[in-house]
Length: 507
Image (tube, rainbow, N blue to C red; front, side, top):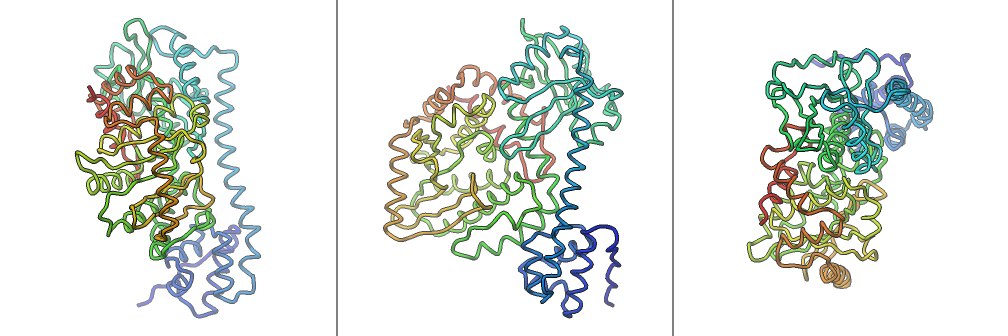
């Protein structure tokens, strides 16, 4: 027996009215949701969600529906009202966030940025917090709004695509950190959860003569000091992981809908897809879509490859490169290509172009993330070459199979979600072969030894090698998951842990 369609409520909002009008025009045409979805190359589930005001319609969707249903522009004409309502909803969320920041700012007025923890008042907050802000500008350690039963707010800044995020810190006295399980996870009274904040436990102590602040995900995990100390190394990891996690988790349902819809482009020899097809997603989620599609496209195109390819990657900054450490599909892709094309005597080659301007424009924490990404690749027997030549800075990501094909696949700093193509003409093969050869020949990391490549890269990035090795050794012993772990199914800490283990294992 056919199910009665859910009754709509067009009077509630412009989004509801659009959904009701879409259903009306569809039913006038005598089409099912499945038929309309097939005509538009989208799922019937998406049609249903837009009709029930569970998803925002995009301009591209409205125009396509007008054409398919012969609605004479009736749906497109509703878009100004829908977009206004959508912006108002976003503004309301932003207003709430500003209210929290204002409360924090008010609490700070007239009060030194001093630690609420017990070890050495003010020393950590004024010293360490200043170091964090130097490593990643915009980091703030502040007092919470009045009546919040937590001790500090750790605010991590916006990146190019990574959204800002705030963590709450609940203190555990230093003498009790080995018995942290006695502290229940009800200390934040629901305030953190109400604003979508992640709560960490924290303790403050001296490491030799140096005061440090360490954090962990739960009291029962304890605080692996000094591994979980907050410094340039871990602040960068917290910033990238928490920001990406928040963005992908917020868009999880929409991403689940988008991936199968966009896979139809995989059957085309090439494509360049506008961001409008995912306009309701955050910039970070759009990055994930582009990255996921490019990985699938390359893997499919390499099915018949027999020669070892050269990989050219476009990431120049730590924020971009961290996707190799955190995006689950990229880690799977690296494992698959390494297993297929790498031997102990002939590692696969992956070339980066990182001009000096990109290094100078990157804060300390981002440069650490860039090195960790290279270390993870090296752990998989992938030789990382770094060209500093700015002439290659705009070259799109590609994979070159000599004498056979060049696979263009780029989402990094792209105008759209992605641009992919497969070329086999001799002139194209020569052009990209010249780029790949020049990039490797001019590489600052040209060496047959992995440790040498990574040490030279660290020097180029202005990173202290002994300190990096020490921090990686500390974290390799306990893993990063006790300090922070993703909630999104699309992220994993496997890359970070592998990079730390590899750097720690080097002679």
